[in-house]
Length: 510
Ligand code: XMP
Image: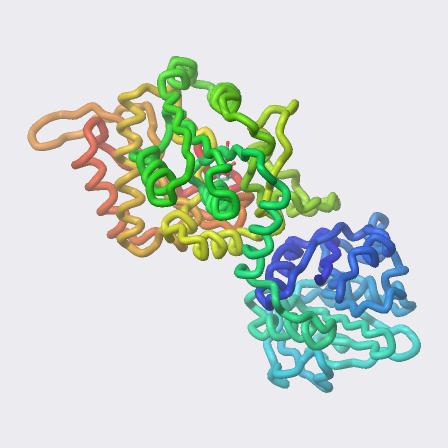
């Protein structure tokens, strides 16, 4: 294990993911984790992340200085380097030499860190402060950039390394080799963290945990719950009881698809609850977005409780919780990455739960979850599925939902997804979907005047849903989608394109 101490960098998770791409297990811990706690984890190495602060700032996040005495190799990145140098008696120069963007690192002495890296290599810089003077005793310079003399440093005696640039971002093309060298050559990690080994280990663990009792899982059709279901099913077969609730605001044919794949192909025990009528009657006439969300959330809990109460000997509730859901965020002023996670991923399940939780994916990043899903035989269009909100089409249908207008949205949505897939863009765009606007505009079709609804298209690029950019879809693709929707979906005579990023917009319209 390599521990990443998080000083509030937007890149901390990226560091942890890069380490795992080198087949080494990594965990993120808050910057102020006591050295004793870290030692108890018995990591083979520690990486100090970057961070938005200056080491001289009043509330600058500081790690327990005792970590430098643990005898465990440490790599400080950017702020992490500066903190290491300052803690050990060196000096940091404030502000003067801001550097942001590409730079060339000239390696003077490769040591173990730069084995296999070109002597002049592009690196990504993003810092205001820099090292002005090294501590006494034993630090060597491994490399410099035009602007930064102490760009890569090493203290052999204690196996400490520091780099001013960010090896975790794509703009440092050889960054992965550098991280790999640290983990494998310097820390001696074996590099045996693979999804095959993860699955093997989880199958054993799930069986041992569950014993002879039954497990309940709320299947939504999304990536996380699907992969969790496939994994647990492989471990315990029919002891897994999946509950799939049709809340009346699913996409077209979604319920059929889920029943076909999990019920038939995988032969899982699948309890299908068609609660469309219940949901839609509760939603009738409700046009306020938060109210719609609440109704759907509460009704789901009720329906789910009823269905699960019928399952005998159920001791566990399984969830597709993933690692980003459980990483403790570091509250540092002015750091957007530290923002509290938005309402949705949490919640949805009752507080006074009578079940024990089973969360076999809680150590995995999303790309690892997908890989596990693939290895378990889930099709690509399930493991690569775009995110879909819990309240479903209700938050893409402005105003109060009705069966008729939901059908209009479903048909339009299907055309959008179909065309985006045909264009080969579905898997590279974060989300693409249709929004139903309950306003009518005048049009002309054939010789007739029409007075019909509007569909808005939304396509956004994002890495975590917290921020997003609207995508510049090709005009001809936009044209195809628009004419197909207007020709094939009764009740729509106008299609518009949403060109709002997040912020200031949100991804969903409600
Ligand atoms: P917003 O609209 O807040 O969405 O920019 C950010 C991401 O979260 C998804 N989303 C939800 N997911 N339950 C969910 O499980 C919800 O209530 C919910 N609302 C939004 C949205 O699709 C986007 O990926």
